[in-house]
Image (cartoon, rainbow, N blue to C red; front, side):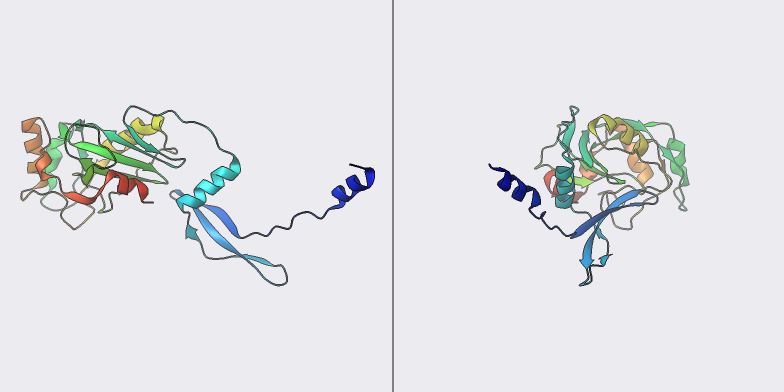
Length: 238
């Protein structure tokens, strides 16, 4: 390459780029990432369009641009992991729950406070400022094809999301944080169902269901009501 060619290379006009999408972090009760289309006027003025929820594909583009290549270790019960969320299985076990009933006719359940209550196997999906909890039948770790059921707990929405209330969620959702998310859930105060539809196949009171589980030393899987989705289908949903 001669001197004239080198000078030409240095003088070559840079590639022209234009902004098309902006990512903005919004902070409130939780931190949310949103995308905004960028509108450029003929005069060159730039304005942001309406905010939209950040999609998984957009999040992956951002991480790719940032050059993230870090490998994260997983725990034995970890089912799936992304840069923002972690899903894992909680085997059937017992937890001492705390009830502070807010509805008439349910106050008696407070008598169970501090008593270890059997629960079914659970699938927890944490991250992005929320915690989703589902139930699974049996004692085997679920696969992507395993059907999910509604979690038989108060303070749950029909989507599987926990009603956060005043609960402070962990700031990260990695496999090493699984125990922290479980503690947040099981140590929260259960005040009543956060939904009006039926979420267990049981015709008596919720207190009687838990008392049966305590007597039998296991949660009766037969009362679990299907969500209509598998583990894989829920994990693929945003």
